[in-house]
Image 1 (cartoon, rainbow, N blue to C red):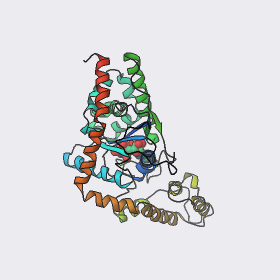
Image 2: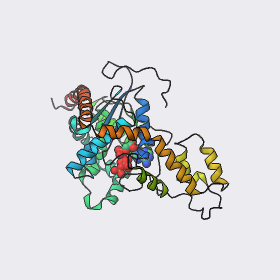
Image 3: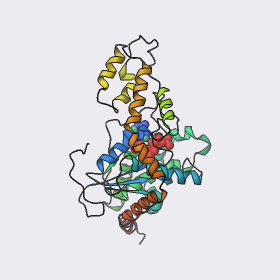
Image 4: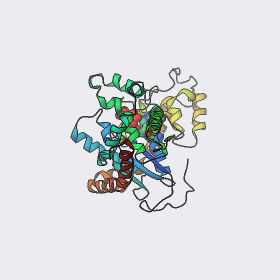
Length: 339
Ligand code: AQP
């Protein structure tokens, strides 16, 4: 879904007939290239053609992060990162989840149409239980219900997300069906929209790139850290000697080259014929990644130096979506017998 030829969009506050999309991102650390290639790229593209609502989901982050100052800082960092990567507050709405408390009210109501068994079978719940066994809090279990509330409170029909979110999205659709069956047609079933890189693997080359696993390539870290992360990447494990031919289809470094230049086939050929070694290919990737993100990294620094500007953008975003969230809650309360 590219938008290079998209017509000039109307200002965000003007009435619009553009279909509505929604996506949320956790402020659980600065975004990595998996977040960008799997989701944020689409946020930026789609803001031209859709009424786009993007949310920094701090309630969700509380399921793993329990340090107030850190959460506040990371929320600001995530806002700066999204703006630096191309979200334009004139074309889309960006706000913080906890600034619209209607989300949690709707989540509670949706819990009453969601069997616990649906939540217990969610793959991310099972993973998180393993990753943080000392902190299996209730929020981890009910996370997908709040996620469903985030999306459907705006009656969004499309959700740009990475493929790792497919099970959650499917659960949102089930929750919508369950609600609509019990209380009458109220919410559309949201559909996921993926990029051409829907799952980016981490530096270990095995698991999806993830902030909490420690296998990420950061976008906004100091240059030397980004280089170090890329140079630590696992390549084709069967390529032992420099003269062994490589297998680009199983090498994560080669796969990432697809997203950072249009000559990846040439690079792959170099690997296949052992003309180039893994170290050369990683060095080239590091240069390209840093070049690709040079402007966003500069914008990020400027934005982080101006917290008031970020605050204004986020406050305006929360105000802009207020009427939509409140109208949905009035409808839902009425249908459920609460008014
Ligand atoms: N590796 C990935 N490949 C493709 N897309 C990805 N996304 C995340 N990792 C990848 C997509 O980025 C969006 C925002 O992610 P999030 O922070 O809300 O959720 P997450 O999946 O929890 O991200 P992390 O890095 O894995 O965070 P932790 O480790 O804190 O749980 C989503 O659309 C997601 O699909």
